[in-house]
Amino acid sequence: MSQVDVTTSVGYALKRAQSALHAAMDQRLAEVGLSVSQYACLTLLEQRPGLTNAELARGVFVTRQATHQLLTGLRRAGLVDTTGSGRDQRLSLSRHGSTVLTVAAAAVRAVEDQMLAPLSATQRESLHRLLSSCVEALDPGPPPVG
Amino acid sequence: MSQVDVTTSVGYALKRAQSALHAAMDQRLAEVGLSVSQYACLTLLEQRPGLTNAELARGVFVTRQATHQLLTGLRRAGLVDTTGSGRDQRLSLSRHGSTVLTVAAAAVRAVEDQMLAPLSATQRESLHRLLSSCVEALDPGPPPVG
DNA sequence: CCCATGTCAGTATTACTGACATTG
DNA sequence: CCAATGTCAGTAGTACTGACATGG
Image 1 (cartoon, rainbow over the protein chains, first blue to last red):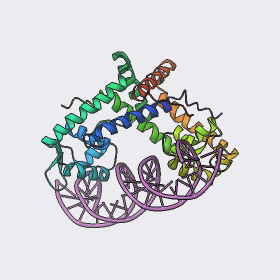
Image 2 (image 1 turned 120 degrees about the vertical axis):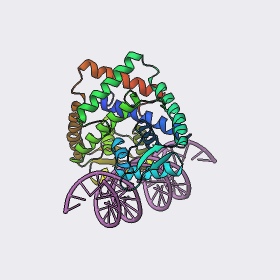
Image 3 (image 1 turned 45 degrees about the horizontal axis):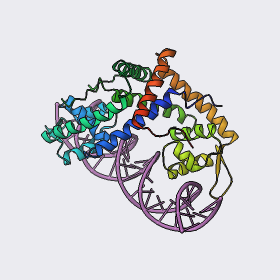
Image 4 (image 1 turned 60 degrees about the vertical axis):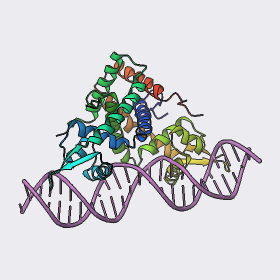
């Protein structure tokens, strides 16, 4: 009687969908040796090579300390290269990193395809547009990375 | 060039939306002294009074150990009552718990309303339906609590 | 001098696995 | 006996805040 019905709540459906997606991604990415967070970093670095750690952090919405230790693992695995020194250390995928990301991205795409399988192309676009509206309504901030 | 474009990916939009929603809920619920997880437990207990801890755990998709410590906090705060003993301990909201949940639910509803503000009633139903399809496509398991 | 950054360290939170007694 | 449960304990993974040196 507290005015929130789980079977009707869009928020609940949203949580369930994201949770299922994350779980599926986590499972598939584990086969490539990546966590979801690591995958997110690699994806951003591929699309925007030359980011600094701080910029990367802003791009994935965590602190620079969090990405710092993420990157420690990625560097140790030889997936990410650092060029430059001092305050201005630029990040980019190594050759190996690109290869791994290609495999990982294929796995992620497979999961996403499974999720969207019951939807038509029009419905997929609708979903994307509706979700984007929701994000903007909650967070009027700037989505892209500087 | 790894076939995943962040600006097009439904999965990314989904993650962003849920993340924004969770953050907003977390902030509002903190004013009532609840975490999102605790709120989820209270909501389920209101709709299905008499659940055991193990059933509650299945309902919120975590282990019974996780809900056990969640409940420790909720009991200490006087929000949840336990009746019965042994293996069959039934849970329910206390009078105070109901009151708190009412306030919390109002806060959550406000957040959800903000999120859905740019959407028409028809669009909200669409979004809910599309998300439900996604969940089912990823996880053909049974959603409800036994 | 100032601000952003890289980095090290510690802390908090959370859910997990393991283990065990109990109960129906 | 067995399966499920409540419970205690330890572990892991993650992101956080604090602090400090550096560099432009």
